[in-house]
Every structure is written in structure tokens, then in C-alpha cells.
Image 1 (cartoon, rainbow, N blue to C red):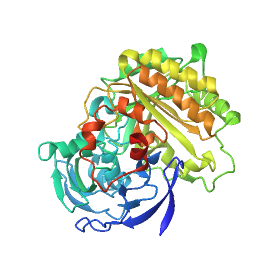
Image 2 (cartoon, rainbow, N blue to C red):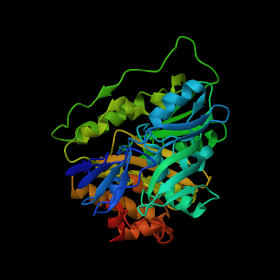
Image 3 (spheres, one colour):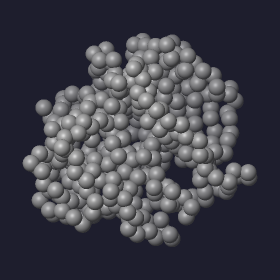
Length: 434
């Protein structure tokens, strides 16, 4: 039976067969259509969709296999959520080595998209901390992949968008922590130059850094925002016994996007001015720092029935000041943007993945309501700026980049294509290869 499926951005939609994988030792089903592994559907575009084909749901592969409490080495099935790892690991004094902005992604999805986080400048990508995984191909073969054993398959699968086969289990190295609390600082800054100075000043002493940007500001205020940096706290603060439990939900899809010209500028102005002129120090639980959007379940519904498009790019450090300024001016001039625009510095640690997105430079990410041709034309203009600067756009958050742009951003695509399972495909791959 075909079902209408969608990604987290709710654009595009696809009709596909659904097949659930329940046991890691079982063979793959072999439908007549193409196949694609599908975890929890948190990719923003069509890299997790397979219109006209079959999705292999992996969430039932959610078992812990082995854990060494002395070294923090965890082996688990690929359908396990990062949230479930956190619930298991934190009480034992361990944490994820790298985490994206949501904990509701699967281990397999984190590897396939080689996710990154607020500590990229010191820890690199998620793939840097993967020790091994099993890759199940449609011909029934199983490969144990490490950086030294089947290392070429390891490199193709990390950041390989699920196209090389199905990851059944993985082994990752967790990070030792004292508890669930973070020592944080928030700095309000006035322009893009101040962000770059804060970022450079914070790299040595702070493991986690990220900035929220007022995407509506222009002129001398261009790039203003709030810079947040932090480290794991050494001990538990007094009078804070447990995790925050407040969680809201967006219960319905409104008829129009709640992110629009009437709400965007007032929200960005208020959010910027809520920050103190002086650095604000706090001890806070890890959840609101790492996962602010996870506090609102189904927040993607606020963009209305047409959904939204997320755009994340990276530009090299040498071109960052001019390129990011041009990106922000173009966005502010369009009158479009999002409540949560994020600016972050990537470090120099190289990912093991052949098609991994992070590279040294500055990365900008924000959402745009899908209003049809206007937003697509805007994103094409942003592509021109990114391409001219020698940057790239993130496939896991894309629903519209062209084939020539993808091949420019990821010159290893041709070598990668030799590792694709002949039965695997996705809407994204067919689009950029067309």
C-alpha cells in the first residue's frame, strides 16, 4: 500500500511503499521498486524520501547491544534515537560526542548525514566518533566497516545519504561528563565583525559555541545577534535536581504560515533585545542549550500547509566576512527569514565521510516559509553567493539545489557513485543526477 510521506520541512511530499525492518539479522525485503533506509524522518528535504519507491523503516531496530562503562564505547542498532542514548548514558556519566540541534534522529541517520553540532571546532562531525558499523546490501552481503577494514565503504557511507545500503548497527565512542549541566555565557553583539571576533576568541576555551542572528537587521546592524558558549559543568548545581519537564506542542497546521512579514521583524527585534548588554552567565540543563526546538513538539507545523525550506551553507574562512554579509543583506532585503537563524564557525578537523558537508569556514542556517516561486528564486540567489565563495549547501537540509551546484559543492560525487547500492535511491539523488 502506498502512503504519502513527507520530510521534516513538509516539502516535498512523496508517495512510497513502507516496509519495516524489525531484526538486524534478517535479510532485506526486495520489492520491485527502489529502496531507501528511513529513520525518524528529520531530514528537511527529499534526501529521506523515495517517491514511487519503498522506504525501509529502521526505527524498530532500537536495541542496545553492548556498552563498556569504563571506556564509553557503545554498540547499538541503527534505529535507536539519540534521545534514547542520552537517557541511557547521562546517568552513567557519558554524553554524545557530537549532537545536532535535535535529539530525535536515529544513529543511522546521524551517520548517513554525518551530522555536526556546536562543538565542531573541537570534535568534528558525528562520523569522527564512529568506530564501526555493519552495512547490509541488497544482494544480501554484510560488510563490517571501520576506518581500516573496508575503509572505502566506511568513507562512502558516512555522509552517504543512505545510498550505499542499510546500516544495521553501529559502534560509537561517547564522551565522559560529570552530569547533565552546562556552564554557559551569552553575549549580545552588534554586527558580523563582532561575531567573528567572539567566535575566534571562544575557540580555545569553550567546547560549544553558536550564535543566533537577527536575519532582519541591515546596514550597520547587519549580523547582530546573541553568541552562546559553554562547557560541561564539573558538578551538579544546588537546588536543581532533575531535567526540565515542560514541553509544548503545535497541535495543528494553521491555514497560513505563522512565520511571515507581520511576525518576523517584531520577533527578531524582541529576541535580540532580551539579551543583556553585559555577558550573562548561567548554569543550565543540557536540553534547552542543545535542543531548543525540541521543546515544541511538531514545531514544523507552524509554517502552514505548504511547509518550509531550510537552507544551510558553509563558506570558507577567507571569504566568510564578505560572503556572509552578502547572504544576510540578500535575506534581509527579501523580507523573508526565520525566527531561528544560526551562525557557527566550523573547525579544521576533517570528516571521514566522502560526501560530508562540514569543512573549515562559517556556516549559516535558517528556515524560509514555502511561498512558491519567490522563495525558490531567493535560494537560487543565495546559491550564487555560496558558489562564488567556494562554499557548499547541506544535502540533508535541501529540497531544491540543482545538479550542477551539487557537483560543484561535492566534487567527490563521481567516486562516491561507484559505492551506491543498485537497489537504493532517493528523491534527492535522482534530482541532482538528472
